[in-house]
Image (cartoon, rainbow, N blue to C red; front, side, top):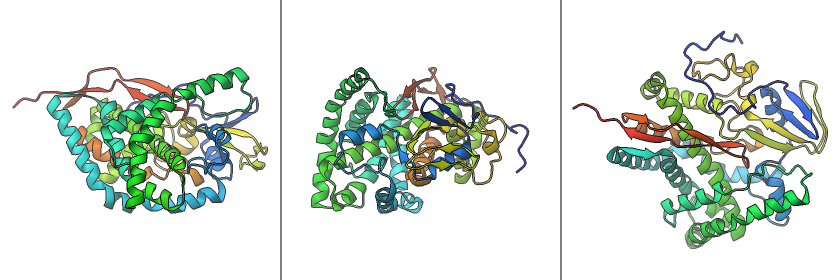
Length: 406
């Protein structure tokens, strides 16, 4: 592949740089953890049988050894079986047929409200929107969605900053983690009592074509269903909310890019959104634990039982995969063979995000309506960091509708 020497039309640079952008060295052992930064090496590890070790999965499994694992934490045949059964809810054709009208209706209503009020705090709006869409897929439809969005925000914003159990925590550190975890019990129980339990009861009486009905049919306990709902809350609601906010920040900050986006057909708009997501992956790191020794194609030998830290921000900025100027937003960039438009932002291998199609479609539907308004930013957006998923949260995206003549 011939790489361009420069991006033909640059549209700003990465906003989430935090010292983990460099893809070199591609693989490095620091202490007892293997740090993998090269795009091909990260993808290779994700496509092996290495076990999920991020999102506090190992800690959760230690605390709940007899419970069925949520789909995010499961591995091997258990995970493949779960993914096969839920695939029908996230297939692109299903998403388009079943949820497009819902997305359009809710986006129209929320953007109309912004237009009427003349201003908005985007984080609050996009959380409600993402919750309403994901709730339909999951089956959380027997409670007030605005209140549910607030309950989920309270839970996830209070999550303790522990991404992975390295196995070498002191007793004091473990105590602190446990005490932080107790803060989550109240919002989790409120979410369970007011949102999950009513949905379970309704679907036991009248099953629907959604995830909770599938879980009931598969024999999941109420506690296991709660854990799955929290998993989908993080994966399908919080991350989509953050991406919509980040995309808005980029598109409002470059009038040419905004015009290009609004004038493009759907594939063209998706290409721009994928490039924003490549540049700004919502989840910056993934973790895996090897079950057996792995020999990567570059000659690196990873021993069995190794903890592997996979740098998605670095992998997405690997020039050998995504071309020159990797920290520049460039929808026209040439990509290496087999490299997706969003690179590894949705992961890869068995744990690749099943909701990738729904996330991009709902983001596009909302953004086309929002950006058609004459908007401007009235604040300087800031980033917060969630160490549980090594991801960003965009705050202070305050918008104002600009009066137009006539």
